[in-house]
Image (cartoon, rainbow, N blue to C red; front, side, top):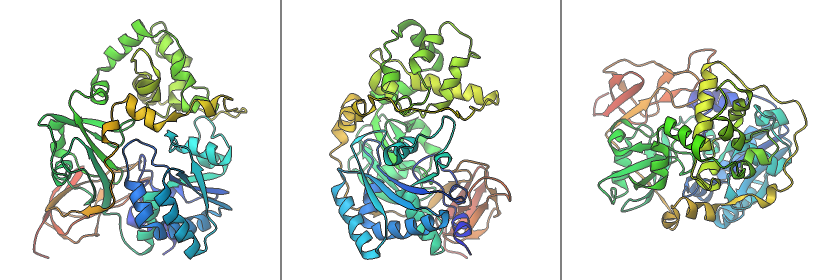
Length: 445
């Protein structure tokens, strides 16, 4: 079986983002292959652990993928402050004899945005509405490389390393079966310090906010890298719970057209024609079909505009997300811009230091919670979504009452469709089949 089919069979998807199926992403040719090792979201430390403990696997996977895509230049883009991780990678590079470059990044957000990373490493600007492959580059991340190494060895993606941090009694880095309940992961970290709390799945800037009462049916997936427990009245929680109409009304009444949201926008700074301040100004005077609102389609939703830049506490990111959803429902797709793009000459002076960002969003008190090891946990039941990726839902290939073994495929992507296979993360009995397949641990076979 060739590399692409091994990766497809194992169900590998992008571990650090939206979950794009990796067998599709790397089925191409490119001059440059970049591994995103920035882990730029505040508080997260999963990729740092993997670089310390699995550097050899990462290097071997990089070589396999780079050879497949024909990459002349092979780069690990990593923050220069990750000194232990850099040392570990250097040792593995020396042992392996691999021709892979370590590109050292400053500690800014969002260094890990793939279009920002492409510009940092290559100087190339991904076109508006485009992808890195448009500039002869492929970007993947550390966790994906670890999963690719496992796929080469015939192992499916059935576990996930997850940072459990924030208002918990024993912050931990956990290795958990995919489909484990979020609540069980919080319990493994000593439980929440407060009775009334909310969580962020992912990083504090771009993660998904959930209230405590909605956690009952929430499970670890292939793309969840962190569970951040925060007080229910935390700034990040309140911001994400504000109704969209209220956010629009705030913009209509309070936007002062200062331009800070635009001047600090990372996509604007690499030359994209995204001007959040114009969108905020237009929301009160123009119809939603106005051309200016189409600029929202190239927003990466990093959150700098609302959580750092705006002096009025407004939410350009949420408005952009609302506009993107509306335009997609109208089947609007941004055309790739064929003109010449030029990065802003002030870009280097407008990068947002991560430490200042953490202070601004009030999470700096958790930044001391560092992890030297990962704790593997076992669970007696899992709920495994058939869609943990971009594309169509996988089709169940098991029946109620079936006994399945750990690592056995339970959902297959339909032929010719974009998607990813899904596997049992524990051995047990199939108890429910729907959008989620529930497995209960048992003794039979």
